[in-house]
Length: 433
Image (cartoon, rainbow, N blue to C red):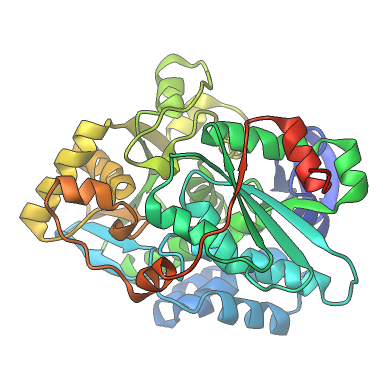
């Protein structure tokens, strides 16, 4: 498997290099040079297979020249050891619950797979890897739990002060060992900017082996393809067409689904639902891509003002906005709409949506049509509602907390408090302050 940079299609690196470099020096993102196609017979057999078995088929289609079948199967069986169940909300609308992993968010798929891929490549090497990751909420928890106590790897997680929920912060700050939480006095975009600047700093890269666990890393996107394929296998017998509705912040989750589609997964359309950080919806309306500082919303993991992975989606369609818009639409919703939708769905269906997932429900309500063919709308339920207690207290909805939340509350928190300043961050990484 060879990969190029979205900023330079003539660049060619192997998968291991892309995993550990994370970000090309030209500031593009890595993409596979060739997207192999899923075998048709293999796909038909998915109806009888488990999620880990389908995950293996998807991953091996891409990585068969990189990792042996035996090693890849072991990685997947260890990483994907939880389910992604479908909950039927109505006849044609399903919630794809992706929050049954240890950090209670969809990013467990990417974090756990990536940590084990890195451990596989490092097992015969004697060097330390430093992972830098910026989080707007859920990525950090998944990375922390995915990489906790993995030999040869230390992790620094940057998160914006006052802009993650209490449970999200607990997931970042109660691990210790090889996991460090750094609270930045700024926004998620500031955290992401510090991480990107570190990757491009020559002095840092001379002293440290830096890589990222954000969705800019290609090994985070591969496992997010697994549940799109698994869902298609579960629904293909009953529905002629599938529409996936993905709450989107940094656009990695939906990019993974669209890569799977380019590899042959039958999907009628993708809908990217955003909060008030509506950079991509505005792009489709105006034709101008205009990143701006992110604003805080109830759906905090989607508070992104410059979604990194959208460049991958554009690259899939040769930067042709009209071709892209035939396959992807993007819609945005504000906090008032999110709260009203959570209350309505709870009242009508006795089902609790997290604020992110609520944007997906709103999108389905806006686009659903009375079609003659059978179309299923699959909303990706990206996080457990318990991670956003303030929202549900206001709405007088009681959330039952999973056992691991109470366990975290008993642990001591550790964090580094830092200004939004690259020089301070650099000195910290080098151990100079």
